[in-house]
Amino acid sequence: MTDGRPDLYRSQRYGLTAGIYLLDARSFRDQDLPGVGNITDPTLIGGFIAKTFDAGKSSIRTMLGRRQLARLKADLMAAQKDNVTWKFVVLPEPIQNLGVLGASDRYEGYASERSELLGFIDDQAIKNVVFIAADIHGTLINDLTYQRREDVLTALATSGNPLVAPQRTTSAFEITTGSVAFDPAFGDAVTRLLAFVPGGQVILDQLLSSVKVTSLDEFKQLPTSVKNAAMQGLIDQQLERLGYSPIGLQDNSLIKATLKQGSNAALFSFGWTRFYIEPDNHILKITTYGIEPYTAQNLANNSAEVNSRQPEIVSQLLVSPQN
Image 1 (tube, rainbow, N blue to C red):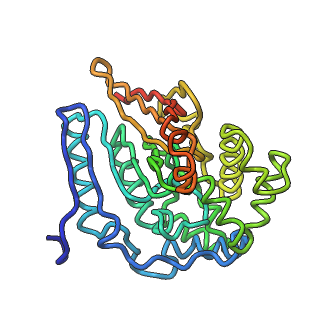
Image 2: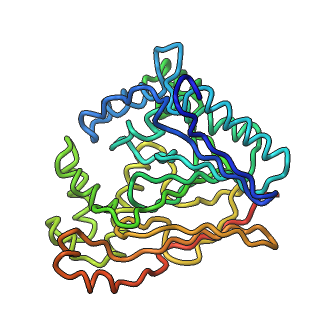
């Protein structure tokens, strides 16, 4: 038991090849912050980010709880000391920065603790850490940068803008895994949401304009690859405005990765991701398979056609371990 609640934290070693650390991100988390009232308002965005870093507070908000976070740190340190190659940290919600839309429920909404965890991995030089997350029903591969809390608080005190605090690079990265069959997939969920949230229509119009269509119905008829590229471009645009790293593993000497097929984002498909470690050189192969998404109505109207859809590789990444 942990703090009177069931202990759901799990860890498993696979020799010196890999360790898996499965986190409970629900039982001990503090209350989510209210979302941003208008996702295009810089003042509201800055105020929200300041709150995620617990500006004006002596203690920090937690997603994992202090005891669980301490256990994870200890396990990562032990794995590094024992020369375990890959360390897979599995959590329900993404730790990568994706912007303020829906951020309250992600680790992004608990930025102080996020900064502490990524800073620990960075400061202790823990190599080959891969976060695996779910929840958003799409695949996004991204390196992980962070701002130190003290830098953000200093930036707030001197300029009033938390975004001017420097972003620090780490050797860790994350992949979110899409759902096998949950409607809507990430891309469709985002387009629906943008139509209703304050300021969302402006961003939605930018998406439609980027592929030269005038309505969401027209957008839905586009090829999946076109929609996927447009949505990734839209996400990158929002991340750039916040000073965050765009989707994908950037030109980062700390991560030696090669995208062999597809892209770093698979946002309009159902599918799954396979992780395979080459036995001779411990290269990590991350392969995401997908099919065209379908609704319950599609399945009811033409189950034979839906059942005949064959999965294809929509993304494949090879990552060499750091020595």
